[in-house]
Length: 432
Image (cartoon, rainbow, N blue to C red; front, side, top):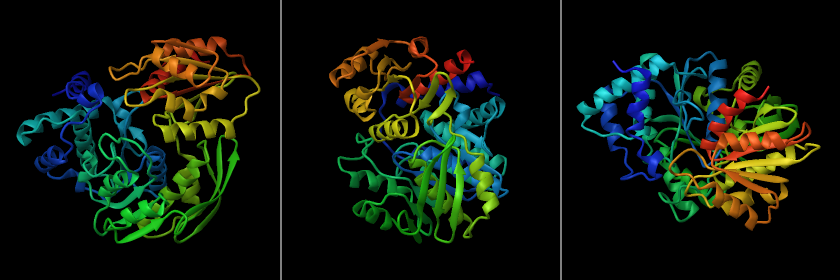
């Protein structure tokens, strides 16, 4: 029997990607062998499979809440986590318990020998998720791709519905150099006979997904769309159109205009899953339950403290848009930021429009793949930021921002999810 501490130690011993930022020999062979000795638990319930450059997590959360509101028992697998690995495995929106996670990780560890494989951290957690979902006999699985799609460990699942949120330049070390190459990898999750809900609208890229073999394709701007998207207190007021129904006046408690597109794709995916429209009551109940920690999450007021895991250039650009469009503090805007290797600090800071903010405090994420805070600070000065400081500690950077902020100011913590996760744990302890 493995306890929770042992489970974390087992995962840490297999966390090559977290240490190196590299995946060696991308393949689904290891996870396929694990699934085989487990009796194919990924086939125990129908699945909605989600890929895309950004918006996967929000879309998965909205889909989950809609399915739960419809009365289903739902297992959801997402990545990465902010504070605890338990966050990746959810039952009806609630993280797996320490005891259950330890049981599942222990079972996978035993089966590694039988399967004759040495799986990665992500493969172990993926296998644990599918085994747990089969054990508790969920009615549906919502599965978020970890990286791209075709050879991602989650791609052992046959999604009844495949969702593509969007395609931008990301993970070019594995798929590139063109957007078409990235799209081709993401299109690998589309299975014959499935329904594809396609959020990407570029005609060239859309053609790649349409050729992937889905029985039906619903594309944003054609079969579904967000028709109205207004700022509301604590979120957005939306009117959504799906292939079957017009849903006016929906309230979604998430910040940012982009969440309207995610909501439209999610609602269309759930309709496709049931092959029927949803009642207005179900949609309202599902949307009302949506929560996204670390995605433009407001943690405090006076000063306004916001966390957003904008970990790639498109995400950083969206983060800046939400900041300037949805929030308008009377006082100053203070940025706390840190990045991982593989991101160009100057490109990220430009996307965040850091030179339009009043102060930038750089920090070093707590991982061997971190960009040193001093390097981020140099990049900030290079793009014209005047008030720049740095520290190696995420907690110290947050404390420095709070010490400088008045009640009228705004503090935005963003960049790597390592930064956001550590900041979230620290700020929840120190904020009133």
